[in-house]
Structures are given as C-alpha cells and as structure tokens.
Amino acid sequence: QVQLVESGGGLVQAGGSLRLSCTTSKRTFGNYAMAWFRQAPGKEREFVAAISRFGRNIYYADSVKGRFTTSRDNAKNTVYLQMNSLKPEDTAVYYCAARQGAGDPYRSESYNSWGQGTQVTVSS
Image (cartoon, rainbow, N blue to C red; front, side, top):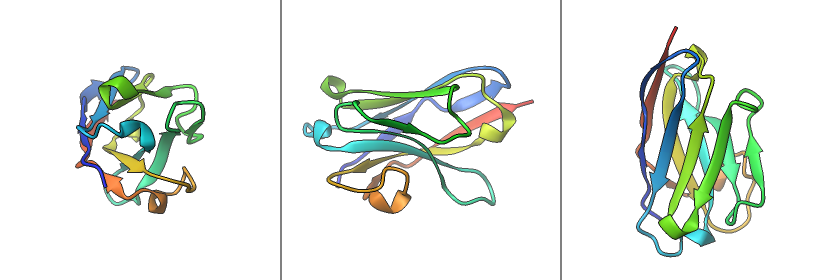
C-alpha cells in the first residue's frame, strides 16, 4: 500500500476551475496506476478518472469528459485532476486511489490505497 495525500479542494462558483493534487512519498510511484473517485452526500462513491502508470492510458467518466483532465508527474510523485467548467453536481469529496498490477480502472475495488479525500463545493 501507499500513503496518499490530496490537496486543492475548496469552494468555487459554477463555471469555475480547481486543480486537485495527490502526492505520495513513495519513490516507486511509477509502479502505480492512479485514479480519482468522488462521493457526494447520500450517494455511492463514483469513478471520475484514471491514468495508467506512465500516462499512456487515461479514462474518464462520461459526466466529466471534456471538462476534467487527469495527468501525472512521476518525478514529483504526484497525480493531478484539473477541473474546468465546474457544475453544482460536481460537489463531492474527491479521493485519489492507487493500484499496483492489473485491474479494472473504473472499479473502486481494483484500488488498495486511498487518500483521505478533499472537499469540492460548487455553488450555483
């Protein structure tokens, strides 16, 4: 497992932007595929985006395609989620997750390391 720390959440008006970061001290960060999930109050955790170990494969939920971009910098042990054109329905706690080895990038069960989450609130 790897310890993950998210940052960058906050309050933003609809149409605004935020960039989330997720970092680890693990020097083998490049061994991990990474993902972002979110959970709104009263709802189940849902997939947002995922990126393979070296960024060659990237996946997005339909609800965020064209608005969110995930990227990673293995030299900085960090993965990012750039969120543009934010909507009130994007309000949630956002979690980053790490997976080592094979697994379905869309499923939370594939990931065995999770950050503590960062709150994103989008006002209308």
